Amino acid sequence: MNVSAWVWVGTLVVLTAILLVDLFIIGRRPHEPTIRESTMWVAFYVGLALLFGVGLWLTAGATPAIEFYTGWLTEYSLSVDNLFVFVIIMARFAVPRPYQQKVLLVGIVLSLLMRGGFIAAGAALIAQFSWVFYIFGAFLIYTAINFFREGEPDEGEFKENVLIRWSRRALPLSKGFDGARLTTRQDGGRRRFTPMLIVMIAIGTTDLIFALDSIPAIFGITQEPYLVFTANVFALMGLRQLYFLLGGLLDRLVYLNIGLAFVLAFIGVKLVLEALADNTLPFVNGGDPVAWAPHIPIWLSLLVILSSLAVATAASLIKLARDRRRAGRKVPATQV
Image 1 (cartoon, rainbow, N blue to C red):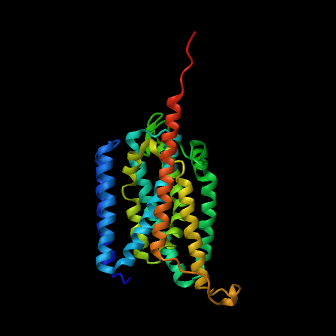
Image 2: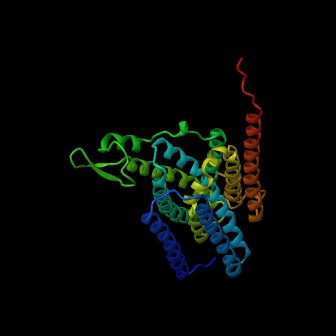
Image 3: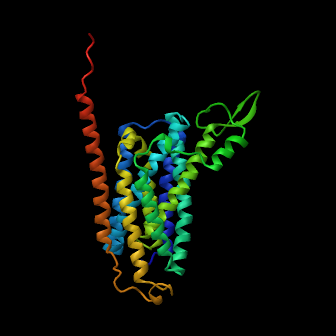
């Protein structure tokens, strides 16, 4: 793709305007969205992504559009997995439901900034060193193995990192929340940080870890920076509303991690095969490309990703229905 500077500027302006509207809504009235409100917003953002892909198809052709859809679906799935950790963090710090919107929005903005930086760095590395695909592929396979091992998320899996522990010790913290504020006055008017700041730090560091996972995954689908960036932005849009829409269903998608693990492993193997096909490393095949290493077509990648996520979701819902039936068959002991 030959994306002009004007297209980049126009895209950034439109996406920034949408984000500012979201900010205005939360700043005006912090609240817990209803199911209807959340559904409308999620449908709106998904519709925008689908329309954007149609626009790419009409202006740039089928291949960029399919690459965008594949990358968006992959990043959206990884973002849903990110919600598992957000749920755990909210529960661990007992964030009041009406103020969780602000936490989520800050987390999304931080994630956008981090991913933007990683996209720029990744594109520069790929342009200079084709062998970086070996590193990306190995990292994704390693991440997939960890996903297989994790199983179903629970609150016990969240471990406070060094930065969070240091913040708890070093910063003057209040005893409780003061709305969505980061600071408050207590003990005779002394300024103190609220636990909301610690929550923001936890969300930010979590975003950093997930950005490290997601960027190699999207570069395994397309190396076009414009598609990488827009797929990530559209994947993060509506994530706040999706958090409230899914609600308690998140912890019931017990096989989602396995589905995502398969997706990441597939993309990791795809990256390694592409690195072998374009090999320039002198200690691999004498510095020549490996003839038997195939380039996996983008349509096959889309098919594998869709199938993996569909099977994981269906299996989770089947298990949920089966567990409910078993619970319904239990007969309480009669009192004598």
